[in-house]
Image (tube, rainbow, N blue to C red; front, side, top):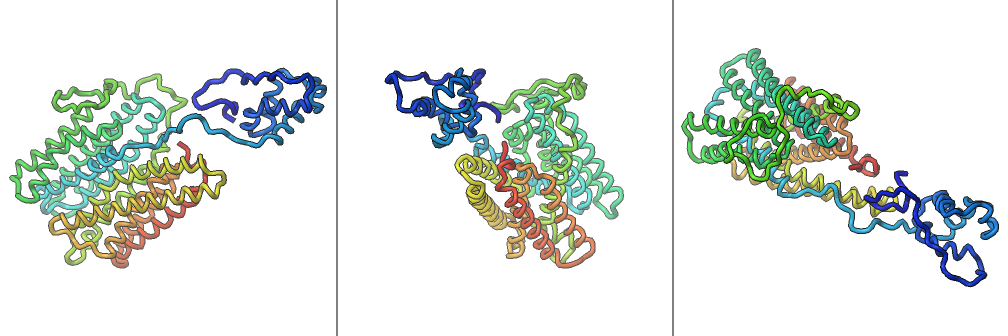
Length: 501
C-alpha cells in the first residue's frame, strides 16, 4: 500500500489519525464494543484489511490487557477482526471531482493534424521541379526521416516526462541535425544506385525535405505548433494559388525555400541557438534555456534516470511500418506500374490530416477508461465499459477519416475515384494506425510495430514479385493488420495496469 487509508489525495500524513474520543455515556454500557464501533465507524468502514484496524487500536494506546478487560477479546487483532466484520465497507471517494489527466483541447489536436498534412503541399508547389524526377530518392529520404524522427521524438518526450526540458532540448539538438544528414545521405545513395534521369533533382528535393522534417520534429516536441503553422504559410499560399494558376518557377522555388528557412530558424530559436526577428516570434510560445552545441554532452546528468536508448527503437520501426502503409495507400498503383495508374493523394492527405482528431480521440478514450476504472467494481464490468468507449472513439475516428477522404476526392483536381476497395483499404489502414497508437499508449509498442512492419513487408514482397493485384493485396494486408491489433487491444483492455498514466 502506498499510504494509510485515511490519507486523502495530495495530503501528507506523518502520524496515525487522531481517534474520536469517547462520548459521555452512562457508567455502565450494555456492550462496550457497540460504543467502540460507533466511535470508529468511519475509519473501520474505510479499511481494506483488519490489520489496519489493529494498527489504529494500538496507536490509540489500547494494550492487550486493556482489550481483554474492557471488550473481552484476546488481543487487538481479534478485536479488529470483529470490528471489520461488524461494520460494512464504504471506501469513500476523495473529496471533489477527480481531475482527468488525459484531458486535451480539441483545437490543439486539430492544429497538429493540420501541420501534419500541410507539408504534403510541397509536392504540389514543387511539381515543376520534380517533373521527370525519380521516386526512389524521394521515398528513401522520406522513410528515413519518419523512422529517425519517430525514435527521436520518443527520446525527447521521455526526457520531458522526467521533467528535464534541458535534456530533451539537448537530445533534439543532437538528433535533429543527424536525422537531416542521414535522410540526405540515404536519398543521395538511392540516386547514385538508381538508373534513369531525374534522380539528382529528386535527391535535392529529398534533402530539403529531410531538413524540414528535423526542424518540424523539434517544434512539435517542444509544443510550437503555431510557430510551425506560421512557417508553412508561404508554402500553403503558393500551393493554393498553383491549383488555379501556374506559378513562375523562381517564385514557386522561393516560396518553398522561404517556408524551409523559417522552419529551421524557428527550430533554432526553440533550442536557443539563434535569435529570430521579433515579427517571426509567435506570441505565447514558451521560452527554452539557451543551449550551445558543446552543451549537448553536458556533464553531470542524472544517470540513474536517463531513459535507455533501446526504448526508442520500437518507435522508429513503428514509424517505418506505418509510413510504408501510408505510401502504399497513395502510391500503390503507381509503384505497381499498372495502366492508367495515378497517385491517390486525397487518401494520403486524409490519413495525415486525421491524425489530429485521432490524437484527441485517443486522449478521450484514455480519460473515459480511467473514469470507468474508478466506477467499476469487477474486472468484467470494467472491460465492458472500456470496450464501449473504445468502439465509440474508433467509430468516430473512422467517420472523420471517411469525411476527409470524400471531401478530398471531390476537391482534388483529377483525383481517382474512391471505389469500394480503395475506401475499405483506407478505413482499415486508419483503424490500424489508430489502434497502433493506442497500443503505444498501453506500452505495447513492440507488438504494434511488429504487426505494421509485417503488413508493410507483405505488400513490398507482393509488389516486387508481382503476386496478386496491388489493391487486393493492400486490402488483405490492412485487414489482417487491423484485426490483429484490434484483438491485442481487446486482450489488454481489461488489464488495469495497461491504463496507467
